[in-house]
Length: 473
Image 1 (cartoon, rainbow, N blue to C red):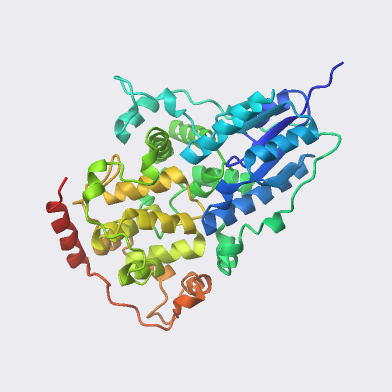
Image 2 (image 1 turned 90 degrees about the horizontal axis):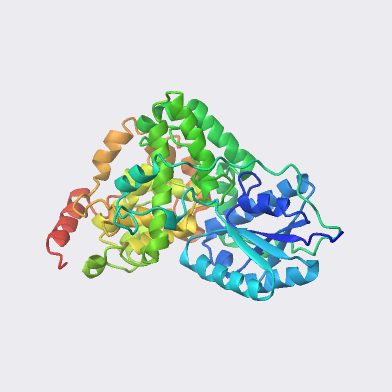
């Protein structure tokens, strides 16, 4: 009997075993499954926090596979070269992977697929990172949706595939190929001392993600609609970190949300809409990849944003020293936890792009360096939405007032008290942790006085509205 050749499973941002179509197919193929993570230029080019978090996720996946009697092979280099080398070493007849949708990944994966097929190797990609492939959702007249609400109305009643169970066993080869050491890659090097501060806030791996989802559905989703905007409350799922790296899938979140909705939990539909908002961002990135780098609304190219990241105003924003408590609390939350509450993201983005009249790309780049839940589509969509230059955007003339927003969403100042130490007799431990995480050259101390606003709220609002009214679109 002819032995079935091994299948190489190329892991990327799909660090799980359950609901993994490529893994399931590889196991059903019949031969050994050799899982590999390739540390290539795309992963090496990530910002400090996303690269560090990816490294943690890959190491956790390696442990999970080991517990299943399998392994994760680690290799560094150009993806095609690494995969061709593994095919030669193992005699593999197929390479499977889960699709990604950003333009750099698409270019890499297309080249890999074409080259492997020309070598006579089966090369196949599978879904899983999205519920609906971008080419399957169209308007009534054809083309993609540019506004969220019609997109939601189109997909909300669609059937979403049931999540796949994890394979009971993963067939192993008789001899494993050599693997690099994760320690040698030093994926957290640029986090410096911040890694020790952020690490306790990480919920790492597939099991933690499933526990997080279960806790949310059992205890939080009922009040999600009301609490999701309160940054001082435990009112969100916090799953963005795990979704970004595929430690959990949108399918799993969707079906859990649907069960909660059928049980009458009032916040479930709002949660489902947020899952679909993520889909919407990915569909826009797929159809209009310029959203990652340029104004989605091209008529905004003439708007007079300043684009110098070195100004004192931008530096104050990065340091959480703008003198605007809501902005500063959110920016410090980002530095200590690697994440930021969604209401905070809107406030800091509005303040940077409107009150400080600074280009959204500067904020996008800072988040790309600092977020452990960094996601290319969601990050770009969020920044362009706040700036006014994107699809489904808040109009430029809608300038969030960070003072009244604080009064509305942090009435008792629980959020601000947790993250700002200056001027407090007994600062919260998390507020003090900011000074351990920040770069030493910032030279900040909890004993410093709290700064006056770099741009007062009323002044910044007036400047933004004046620029909008004088725009030459």
